[in-house]
Image (cartoon, rainbow, N blue to C red):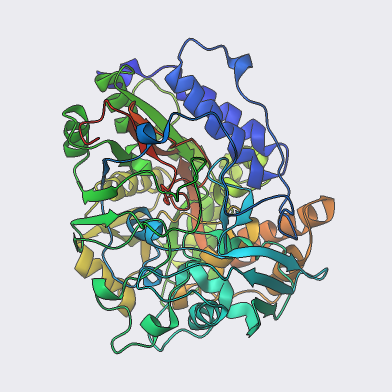
Length: 595
């Protein structure tokens, strides 16, 4: 089997991953882990001690003074003609399904449309974590982390020939600050904490209602794109491809929702390459939808696509494909995910409107057993056991020592959970899940087995996408399997996205305890260090003991891309799954069939 060819054991990756979190600076701990994965899988003979070491990168409160946003770092490169030209085709499991990018919280949007837009600032593709200038030439943050001021460049043009102005920035984020009725921008939920957005000259200033030391990341993330005011205020809004106008390295071309998108290069892009001409190097990038992973693999093997991406649940499939195609033709890159797999509980109806029922399902669930059931055929773990903060938990290395997971206390906690269940007459519940992609059913079946081991009956209710959406919106559900990923690598982003008032669980989440909001405010206002660590631990205690809004259990090791060896400039970096799809410096050599 292809699985048997995976080398070295995934267990090594997991151990290294946990070691990174021991630094308790998880935003940056993901960086060396990613490099370890790429180096180890591409060069299976490398010794473990050769893996890159952990590094810490601080978030700047002002823009780097030495950085010139119009110039790329000077490097030794081939002559211009060797880098420029050609088309790259990328196969993914899904492509864009809405024209209004910000209404879709799933990765489909940025992986197919991010390259059309600019941000005020963005994550550096070299590491995926450092924040660098984009449409803003510089920025400043007040000492109390409540005022963020950006200076907008005056030389950027939208694809329709109009100039990008501070007024466009104001219009873009005012929409996220006050969404239209019935519209939710889940990935920009933090913008609803903004009190005012004002423009003065070239500057745009955001004033928050409360401090947030991580707020700058919202502008760098995949959903922090700048949209022309004229398009936002046009009749119908962003309701068709002709309204998709940005200022990024590529422009909207031929396309079809849920099928494909062609994006020719923007010849007037505002960032110059080392050869003196504007990026991008490629003439065009096309992304096509290939939901079946076998179809993606076949397309890669036959040269019909140049890059294929694989969902987190397809991690093992991707590694098998890499070994099958061969290192002489392709490379593989793995991006660790900031996120969590959990069971969402509908607290607006019985039984989970009662905290005793929520405590029951939380304590009965055996996370170590779930990890064992989801392991590879050779017994190696393919997932990380998680708590409420998922893989960005700064104390992830301690996760197996909390009472619910510790083997020494596991039987005691199970008995407590069963007592909670008996006290409210809970014998089981129905778990809704979507029929596609298949990994939802795979996860749900394992969850069902774990609960049956603990004495609870779980009925699986499999729905197609439309029925699942209808049931979720109407409240016709008791529990669901959720596998959210967070775009921004911070604890505050995880808390907002998963458990916030406007987060992914919407109106169905259990009411927040009075003790939670003050602790969250302290986390958001405090820089990394022992004081913040104490607040995070208290927030975790509240989540486990006083609130129990969900049942967290695991996360896959990561997502993967298989890249043809003639493709260059696609370096491994954290956040690749969401944030790094500009492709402005990607290029293909003469071995490409589309050069």
